Amino acid sequence: TERGATIINPPWFCLESKVLMAAARLPSVQTRIRERDPEAVQVLHRFLAETRLLADGFVDLEELERDRAFWLTKSAGWDGHNWSWGARSLEVGVQTSEAEWARNLRSRMALPHPMVAQHFIKSRVFRVPYLDLDGGVKMMEDARSRLTPFFIRQPDGSVEMAGSMITLRRDSYRIHGASDAAEGAVVFVDEEV
Image 1 (cartoon, helix red, strand yellow):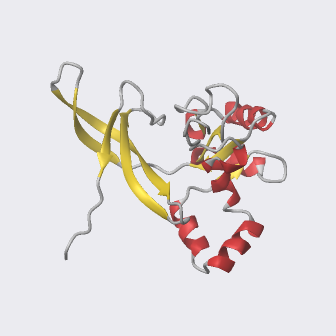
Image 2 (cartoon, one colour):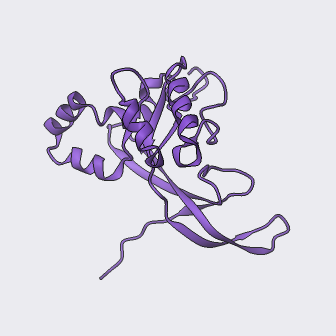
């Protein structure tokens, strides 16, 4: 822009990360990926949660209904309001009845903005110390985790990892920066064997 600001988040839903995660499972996209790197599709399948766009032709509703314990749904990108961040749109299949889950799937498919179904991956659980508001050390038991890596694209097109943050929250599948969550920087180091 004129004042030097750079827009980091994409203003188009097709470039939001969850939509890209869904696209990584499309046969035509996988063909293009394999052309660039024959092993890349297997790496993506290993590290990305299976993600499906909730739209006609992209998802088998009967499968999602039958296997609801293994799926969740959420907003795939900016919806025009604040529903797409902070786990506001998250619905976890295992936390709903069969009838609620079926209604959830159909109502989300009818929304004007993109929604995804994502294969539920149970996160690692930690026992972690944290500082409370008074500066005292407390222990958070059975804290579920979410790792958020940050990447920077360099002017030459290369990408570098700029760091990671871990968010920990107890008794919730909604792992985000809530007031009852603990967050911290994560540093990866190469260990000498």
